[in-house]
Image (tube, rainbow, N blue to C red):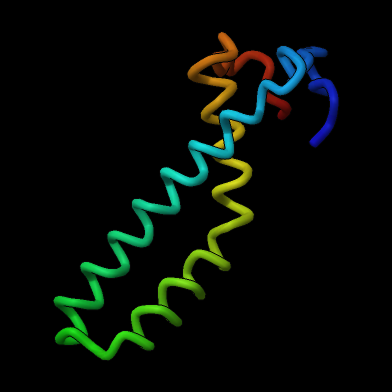
Length: 92
């Protein structure tokens, strides 16, 4: 992640350790994904064996980990960093 925005110069790390809270947001998003995958398997696959649950949930979480990491940090900036999107700064 770059230190500053190349367009407006905004410094992404608002304070030291700011993104530690993103770990908890990422964990919460992972829990939601685990819950949704588990419920989907239960109803769509007619309650498969435990190993199917474990492999499917683990594979799904591994696939989504890079997205969860990135979007947890974005959520931290929007919710707690006083950042909002301004379309006039968007690169053309």
